[in-house]
Image (tube, rainbow, N blue to C red; front, side, top):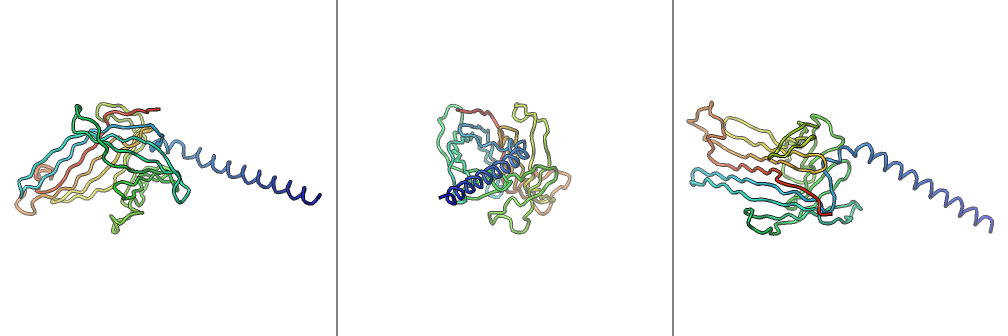
Length: 243
């Protein structure tokens, strides 16, 4: 009987020790990255509305289309995935103008996992941020997809902790990730995202354009001599929390 009590006491003390060690380790990790995580907040009830401009040009087909609309993203719930990591569901809504009603567009997910901020967009997983944040840090934004096998480490942190005004809204701490920057006289592939503390994504620009390969004036910017391509811009319009 004494041995049994002794065994149970030792087991209890061992469990207390292990739980304390785990708790201490978790706190240390959270504390060291807490400031960085503020650029990718995942709080149920938080929402952001974006103004979107989508330009599509196909000169041979005489297509010069510009679409303007709004996207609203709301963090609605969370669940534990198969890796026992917390995953947040983001409902995305669309409306064509201020007088229209919001209509559900799709559902994306987001995670803070393995010192990274990840989003699954249209069933494609991206590594949006890599922690700890550091200027000129690079990482493989397409680590979990097959979109860019030739240039794995193409994401780069090119601005950090800057003051910026976006769509007439002032932010005291913004970072910028340059995802693609590939330009020549006849093409431009350029993609950036900006994140603000306690809000998340506040600006996105994606340019994929081609110009004529002959008979052009190289002194004219490629944006003014587009033959085919798309220019997508998304910038914050409003934000808040329903909780």
